[in-house]
Image (tube, rainbow, N blue to C red):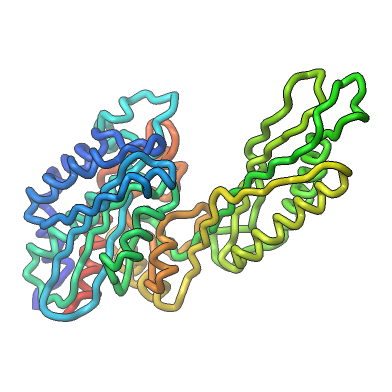
Length: 410
């Protein structure tokens, strides 16, 4: 019987240059979110996938649904490839939307420049790289001739930066895919099995405008907001003692990221708005977290007579909670990746949040693994000069191909 590692390594060897060219083509087409006008990137991606022999399904998201999440356009893409009869369905999900480049680049953020074995560009690591990782892993399976049973699906979506509601969640809710397992975009030196959720709230404190010469005739909204800030920073201190049992996640956190309001220097402010971010660890219940935070802010506001507060939810994203099935999939990836990368690859959690949670919330065992370095900082992800070591791209592709071959082994 042919050794899958040998067969898949041989299948991928002649595809290395093609995989790098494919990734460069992905980077050269802007897909910044915001502004979230991403349909054009999908239209470039489709013919490149079709040239590989894949059949690509286009699933455009209606304009009103895009607008509801602050985007202009998005087209979800699905590639399905079945082997044998029956067997599990494995989804591979990567997102093509990226944060805007920002300032400070020494390379063209859309240039896909090559330097010292690295490719530079916005999205090259997060996560356009995994468009290539997953597509070429599937190419290797097709070329391998291995006896396989099951289906591999590529889910290429465009709304991770806004939460995944019109990407993975949209595909699953419409029954366009019903996978048994899912691997989402990640990095090469660890398998992510859990991550934080997040709650974004806007608290608007209302008072009564008055002349600064007679502040007692008004109600100072900033005083009410200050009471809330005291309570929120006290809550931050309390949360620092609650550690997640998932390695790498740490403790919950609350951050006030934006404050706005007031009319002029000589006017008692009648409106102050706070925007806050509350990170939710896997052990917490998101609904309970939101209810508790709302109660804390409302109680603080009541300490300033005459003031009131309106609290609006901006985002509520649940955490990715590890399961026995997802840990089993992660253990398989860790074993293969440790062999391919010649270093120990472990299961970890991360304190950020991703759209992988939508698969897990649908009951699908889900982990994150793909091409990239040991950390977001090392890749300059969401920072100037984002880059990817191309050797990691090729090794991660082999890892995914080998794991798929094991899962689909007839």
